[in-house]
Image 1 (tube, rainbow, N blue to C red):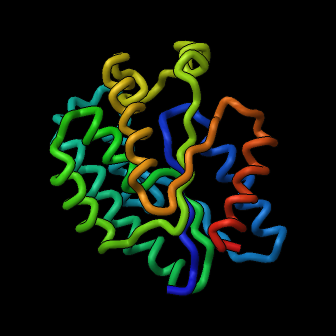
Image 2 (tube, rainbow, N blue to C red):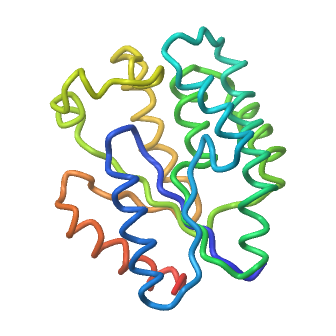
Length: 204
C-alpha cells in the first residue's frame, strides 16, 4: 500500500477530533489526498454498531463489547481504510486497535492476548504508520461538566477510567511509531508538535 495511516488515540475529551480535523486541513492545504474517518464507525454498518456500543441504555457484556468493536473495525478496515491506502491517500483516523487494548484490555480486564488476536483478525494485520496518544490531565476531563458525559463509555466509573488511562501510558511505551502528546497544551501548540512529528517519522 502506498498511502500512510495516522491514528489519534487517547481517553475521551482529549482533543482527538480537533487535532484530526486540523491535520486533515493542513495536509490538504499542502496538496495531499486525505481521508478523515473514525472508530467505532466510518461506514454505514460500523456506524450502526457504534450506536449500540455508545448508547447508555445498552447493556453489553465485556466480551460482547470487544467483539462488537472488532466487527465494526473489520468492516471499516476492509471497506474504507485499506482501499484508501491502496489508492495512495493519507488516512487520518480517530481511534483504532489501541483503543480496544486500553478500554477492553486494561479497563475491562480482558486478557490482552485475546484482544491482540481479535485486533489482528479485524485489521488483517494492518498497523498505523504513526499513532498520536492524546493524554489530558484527569482533572481537566472532570472539569468539562457532567452535561458532556453523554455516552456509555464516558459514564463509566472512575476506577475504569483510571485503568484505561494507565493502559494508554503503558501501550505508548511498547507500540511502534507511537508518541505521547500532552493534551493540556494549547490547540496551536499541539498542532505544531503533530506537524513536526509527521516530518520526523517521514509521513510527509
